[in-house]
Length: 90
Image (cartoon, rainbow, N blue to C red):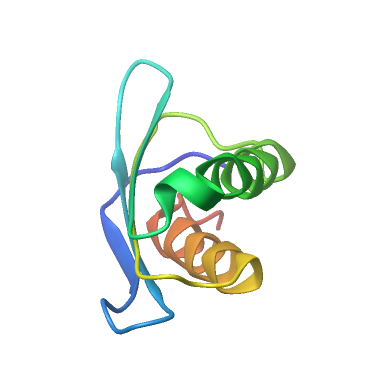
């Protein structure tokens, strides 16, 4: 998946996450801010890295601001932002 534009998904409400995706070169950069980073930071990183591998994401800067979201919410927000930011095949 080639990232060509900026996109956002989610909110900063409690139990949600906001994900911002934008083009980045070289490689992929992930920044995570979370109210539960000390307790669940490793798990959040696993969820994010797994989805990035699954979707073959390249050239993206991803900023995640987590407010205590479940894994499935983080994954859904990230996938939505990535699809909004991707190159559309015609």
